Every structure is written in structure tokens, then in C-alpha cells.
Length: 298
Image (cartoon, rainbow, N blue to C red; front, side, top):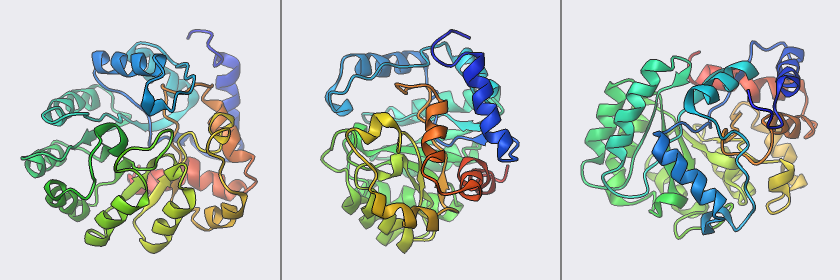
């Protein structure tokens, strides 16, 4: 393992974190694995301070080859992780889903991940992905620049709701707003598909409270912690202290997410950021392992 701020010392720190809580490890619902040439393009975008990064300096902490990245997560004690992959144009999702089948086959601790895009045929390839074993989907409203309530997506949302397959969706307006980000478009999706198991990425940053509203209104809406509460995110999108009580009350529907490997700090910092919220060990156990284990029947 390279010495990039997460050598053996930080690994031991992570393992002590979940060991102290009496957990068998961590379940991380928001990690990125995708075809290498696609991931390199993503890293180039971060390096170039593209507009979707909000112009923020964003050094990639875990710029490793695929096998090494998976090994690092295992070293940290991550029992299950995802391959959050997403298209930015039509025709790309089926190809990504095909890659994901092979990745899941050779990576048994990865929750088989698939994706979708508003285009003709989306319902058919979503069904095919589920039949191939997909256990979670990724949707990226900001990068894809589409309305999640697009009529083309309605049948696919219905299929996913009926199958009970969770969808991790980047629909908040952080770190930079898009034409269809924010709570209103996804609220229209939920009005049509109230049983859809949406996991709102990044806690809905920066519209935290509006997405907490949706979670309180719809029993199958969850939120992942990805990059929320960290020093990095608190600088531009601080979580409001007045909402901590609501966060505690939704403790059974908050899931650990990290954005590994595309994070500008060591992995352990996400865990430390959750711990310093002061919501207690029971909340941490649920968020860092038990909620994900229950959702995915681990």
C-alpha cells in the first residue's frame, strides 16, 4: 500500500473504530469502481477543477489500480462495497452494466451495481441488469444532466420499486448545482413511486433539511453520509446543527458512504466526522454497518 496518508497506522485506526463498536466491519454503499479508462477520465476531471466540482481543489487520495483499491477496502475491514458507475450520455448505461456483471463476478464482496439513463429501452436493460444479479443501482442527476422525473424513466423506476432494489442517487446541488438537482425533481419521482428505495447520496448536500423532509415523508427513502460532515465539505456546505435531532431520529435510514477512492482526505476522516457528531455508539453501529447489512441481507 502506498504511503498516501492511509498506511498501516490509519488502517489500524479504522479497524479500531469498528472494533470498539463491536462490529464485524463496515458496509460502504458509495464506493466507485468502473472501467479503468472511464475512471481515469473522472480523475482527469477532478484534476482539472471542472465546473461540477465547484472549482474546489480535489486531490484523489486513492489513485491506485483496481485490484489495489479493492485490497485497501478489505484492509480497512469494509465487508461490502459498491461499484458506483454512471453514464453521462445515451447508450452508455448498457455497456457499463455489462462491465459491472464481470466486476461483481470477480469481486464477491462488491454489491453488484448497475446504472440507468433516460433513453428508449431503459426499462428493458434495467430488467436485464436485475436478472443478471444487480443489487443496487446508481443514478447521477448532476453528471447526467437529466430530470429524474423524465417520462422515459418512469417505467424503470416502477420496475426498481417493485423489485425493492435500492438506488443511490446524486440529486442534491452539491458541490455545484445542475439544471435538475435539488429536492423538487426527485420529490416528483417519489410522488409517483412512493415505495422506491432511494438512497440520497451525500445526505442531499447542501439541501440537507429538504432531503430529510423527504426521508421523513417516505419510509423507503434513505440517505448516505458520503463526504458529509467532513472538514472538506463543512467549508462550503455545513450541516445545520438544528437538524442533528432529525438525523438522530432517522438513525435506521442513514447509511455509510465514503466516495472512495475519489476523496481528498484519508478514509478514516469520514468515520471521525460521523463520530464527532456526538449521536452515540448505537447510531454509529447502525449507520456504519447494521443498516446496510439489513438492507442488502448481508
